[in-house]
Image (cartoon, rainbow, N blue to C red):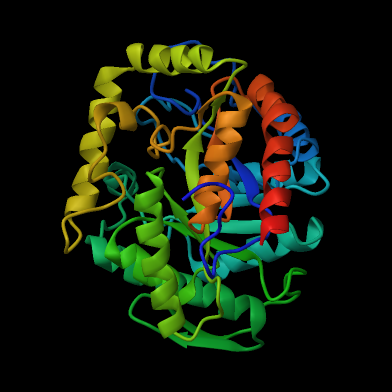
Length: 373
């Protein structure tokens, strides 16, 4: 399907853009290549303000609790998210969190406060977990794959109920809430946005029932379409409104003046990959996926080259000239993607270039598509 066509039922709304916050050391690729990116607060405040003024809608803070796979140092996600919210005016910042390491009622209070103090711009990304070592190190139980998603679904239901109901009660297998009366409620209505990721059947089923947004790993347009169609059909069967949940896709963006230059950058990233760290990361995430009933997860078919970027960001091939990347983004929009979650090599330079050279072309292509429709 070309970027000038949109499948029936797919949105004509503008595609939105988010970026991965580099709040952990090592950047967004597991490579020893030079990355002019820094994990400090000063750098990230400058980046957030630049992204906000370059047309980005969201930023996603990563969650890591200890050194792993090239990320030697980490800033905690909810704290870092709040700092970026206070430093910006319009950017919505999503904090990634792990059920099992947070109580949902406590997190609901924290996010409600963030939301109140930043004019309704706080959001959460519920990560069911892939890094067993963190749970083991912290003395917390590591649940089996589908049990992690069952816990996450209850976690989301408690978040939503705490934010929207007075004297909220809940009785589940993992959480029990007795008349919890959170005040003040968040400013955002009906509540702060709830994101989640995953590829397994359990992840898709949970997204269809309870999440506002579903993050996909990078994939081909055909692979993304299959996930979108499955989730939307299940959501409709669950009685949710059309277009729910919205779909975000990870993509590592290398935009350069020429295609050859962009491809050379990609080749250099892979050439200088930290093979030991990439293989260790691959073993950890594939083990987590194999524990699902269908024996698959986010990284089931990922090659070594794919794993150099944590969430298969090279697979969408957002590598080339501004024109090539803009058209590729519209191809993904045509199969149901509502948001591109971008990673970059040299964040300040690359985000600025994207905002000046790529995003305006995306908007031009969208205008043509709307006119044709």
